[in-house]
Length: 255
Image (cartoon, rainbow, N blue to C red; front, side, top):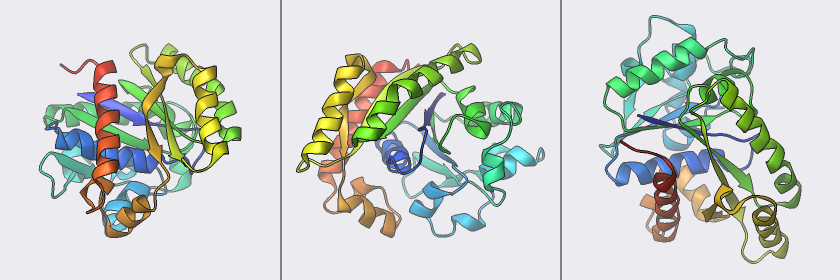
């Protein structure tokens, strides 16, 4: 099983949007996909089901050794896509803490999900490279970094990638797949310039060709509890995330 962490240093960059819609794209392609909400805010669950606060989930499993992965996996209307909510215990302090505090439980969870036959597990992480997020990165196959197309954020990306590269001391198998630009506004020069600036400061292979636009359709999809690709007007967004999926498949060694 491929484990793909969606990670950023700060919130509000489109992590959850990327995680949900990328998971949907992989599931549509026929791969058995598990989408895990490890953000204590529970953004994935709230986007896809209003009942997510009542579901036993990821943080419950970290703190309760008796729980098994199979008991917290929730099927969706798409047969190849399943969800794990953040859970009742998803308080901010559980998202933080010392690196390694939950490493064994994270790895056990991923081993169990692999045994259940999933092809890929996509994890929406809390912002920052500490606590549970660090333990997830220490157990992942690859990491993708969403970055909002705005000048100040773009300048911090190289340091973020350097920090992720250092994670390979703990997890030599971790592949830093690159940065995907999000919330790109085609009509705003500053947004386009920020996206172009990132391509000038990073190696070409570290910036995904696919870009995620700022679009009201993402808000409408979230309000309906749906991936944007299943919306009536979602064909364009569906194509964007299919393109991102294809790029990632070209970088990751699926067996």
